[in-house]
Image (cartoon, rainbow, N blue to C red; front, top):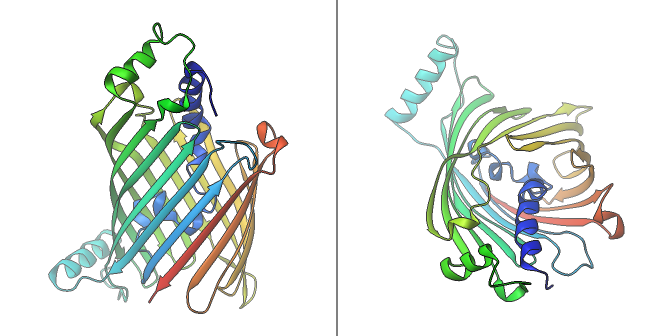
Length: 322
């Protein structure tokens, strides 16, 4: 797709950051919550591997695509470190006289997330580290950090400039390069058990350029994330799980996602949700007895360009290793 530079760069990049703030979030974020908040990494006591792919505006050339990989594992430290963490947490919560049967957990993970739209590409890779400390027999308080490397790149061969000699941004791209790389540090805290999750995270707690053209610095504002879910048992085999996600950034309208999932045993689920950008999402999935996972979602925006195409489709595949 060829377009004039002042449209492709100024509009495409700004659109990716304003509307694309929600696009970079996996529609089925509840399957990969550590991509949103590092404090949730290693919440499960097994090796958890997932890959996903989403294509938006099917049938339109250079429509936005998102692909990701996320892998994480849990470790159980022994000795003085674990005892010290557990003792301090029990004192802080007033549980000195209560036996805490859970163990301190260390969650470690790695991920890669790639977004593309037309000539613009964004790649984000990093690590997640979390400490999960029991504060009762069934609940944990977790702290996490996530160092990340991000790269933005524009393919100039896919653009046409109307007035190359007078376009300052184009000249900057020619002289200083059409890509940049920078470092971000994200952090988070969560309180969770097998029935509920409450989490708060901060993106861009610290940020620094590494190399490349600083004119491509897209958004350096701090972002605040809130996420929660609760498992409501209907009977021994069925549950309803309300979920919510909110992101707050100073210069961009508040984004939220509110939904409800139905789950049968631990094998089959289906859900509906609504996003603040006037988007409806339906999802379904299943987990096999050998811990393989399949998740599918369909996303349709009630207004805008999505009205003339068949929406956005996302697939997530996963494998759990005990």
